[in-house]
Length: 317
Ligand SMILES: NC(=O)c1ccc[n+]([C@@H]2O[C@H](COP(=O)([O-])OP(=O)(O)OC[C@H]3O[C@@H](n4cnc5c(N)ncnc54)[C@H](OP(=O)(O)O)[C@@H]3O)[C@@H](O)[C@H]2O)c1
Image (cartoon, rainbow, N blue to C red; front, side):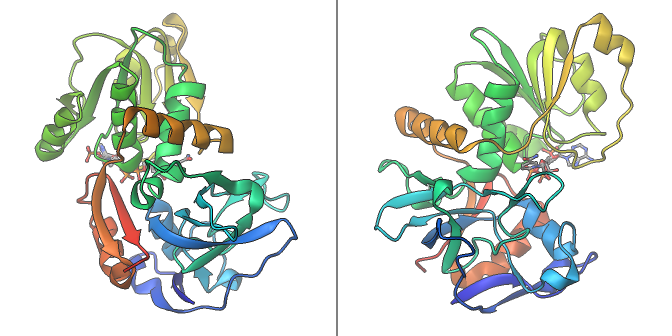
């Protein structure tokens, strides 16, 4: 079957480590695993990290890339693939598709049957393929971890990213007052079109917020603390600009702030997110859809960093 896979590691130029070609059909490691025919997949920064060799060892090469997919199961049902696989051999107790098991950027992918979530008819394969990683992460950050409530305000930092654009759209759909920062004037314009009040990175907000969505890390963390209302939840799922921000602990205890880590989400949260998208007609922010034959172009777009929303692969073309 055709697939996009890491054939080497290249820290300086991860695109040079990407190969598109034939790979063997996926194996089913346990009896409760099934094969899904992939109709659409989407790219994540995780795929670039894999090409750089982060989270993979040379002995695992070649590794089919990709965490996100929507497709058709052996019974013909339309499904979304939940990408987290229980894995006692990993220190976290789990791995994400393309870390220990081949990923979704292929004609077919093998996953435990329990990882299949029904795709609502009103959500397209392309939109559904955006949801399992970035959108699920944003959904859990806002709801389960951030416990965002009626009448509350939300700040989303670095709002051009995949998780951040998802957080803006979801927080607006949930009826919250949403502020979003970006360094880029063009991205601020587009964020405003999504219904958020767009601000320059580091700008003073008109009010303090109850939930902060943090994926930028060192570059924005001090601003996140300063923008937080008493008792606010600062939810962290990434640190693109650096893992070691300076933290003013006086502000943390005096304002009784909660700093909460969050990673991915559960299959139940993915089902809830799909239902929310169906009910409210929410469409993921898609930067561009490429045919699978253009997978190298899709990776180049992701690597350029100059994107707004998700890069999707349509496996039917
Ligand atoms: N824990 C999980 O389950 C999970 C899941 C998905 C992603 N992640 C992590 O979450 C992070 C975000 O991923 P992503 O793919 O959504 O987005 P991303 O492309 O890594 O970037 C997020 C945003 O960060 C901002 N940014 C980057 N460097 C900055 C700097 N030096 N100063 C200020 N802002 C900066 C940019 O915003 P502007 O250009 O708009 O300013 C960018 O759009 C990554 O670190 C990723 O690994 C974690």
